Length: 256
Length: 318
Image (cartoon, rainbow over all chains, first blue to last red; front, side, top):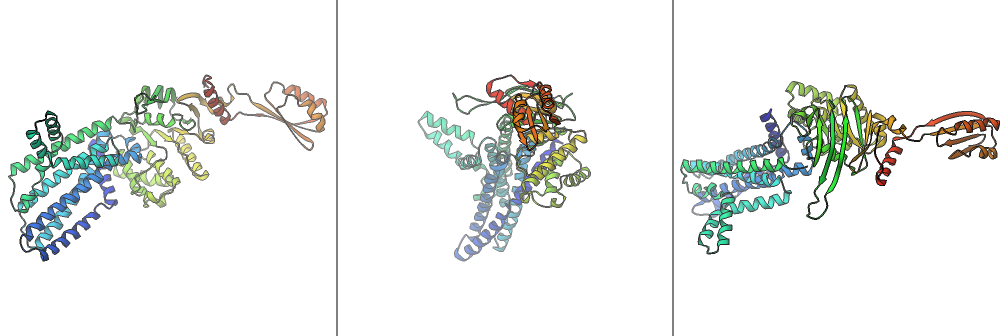
């Protein structure tokens, strides 16, 4: 019953995403990718294939992050604002089960998005006669882990703040998450103890999303070590798990 | 064991700012609802009805006191299998069709596929929405939403149904449909606890009623007991054959006199001086047409209780 309830909530969330026409962005993505590919084929002389690969990975990453943020922030806050949570919580389902179900529902939406976008991406590479190698799949797998972290961030913020505030905080953490190495560098170089403390705090608190970014290497056809891929994935999944746990704790204490 | 037992329930909402006083929504509320009865929870807007229901459903926590459903603390996940709930002015997942909507809530309640299909079909028919089963909820009228909302509360065949303002905002036909549904639930042996501020709805269908004002239960009991208990009942006397100028001489105890042709209507504040009036009618050569005791109404009691609360007078239990 425990797992069943989570799956029922997850499937309903996925169905909501489908009917909100979120997957329509895929059509936009496909047209964009094919259009840019054709354009670049005409304009560039050298490195056309690398640019197409780079742009494709970047577009996949961006579309997924946008979905994770802007759907993720409404996962819980929308249920509370619209009071649909009243009838759900009147069922024999615990609050953590509800949170997990909502998260898995969006993760399922992202998975379907990833599969379709990957298909369009590979078809574009094939048409452009660009090489399709293992590094691309590594990059996309780590992009998917990054989406899971961003979704968890959005879900966590949406358990205690409005949609707008959740969006601002999630996007801020996403940007900071790609700059944490710089924070560490600033902390090491700074002579101010206060600056060191703030920068070190940010470094350890925020997710280090840059470890999940291997798009540059993948575009060059350079694969990362499988051990790096495994450790980076584990790091991302653990960070997401921590955020989901925190979201459950906050949601458990909420009055509606 | 009662279906609902609430003891000394208090809920204070923090104002959100230090120094600003908290708002007391419930102030030592106690009540019980027996199994198999329809209990109307009557109170003006802002009296604490929804807060009480939210505590019962575990949506908010009480500041102090206890609330139990079938002997289990309110908010217990397992006891919710035995309860159906319809919130006030509900918003549902409007991208679902009527059928999908009920199936979703049935699945959450753990119904198996065969039983679920049968319950969905039966309930859609019961609430008169069979034709709309494949229509999305965003195309439903307010009355249809209220009925499909009631159906979701009943999908798992609960023993206790808790409804927050189920007739609010509905037209007379819609209100009647909901009333009939509630009555049919009692016939099936279910317990119904519903909040409302519409007095005729309570008078028509409730076995017992509780009046809540400013978070306190001011009266509780059967409707007929409440309206007769300690409440002055008027008496209407109709007579004929007495000229208008002489009616005034016998009508001194009456609070109101209406003369229409040969007939006169005298309204007495109570039974105390009835014999005196009857004797006077006979003495004047008139004929007695009827004597009708007038029952007090729940509305009068409700207004009196609300007024008493403002004056700080004690509550009443029938």
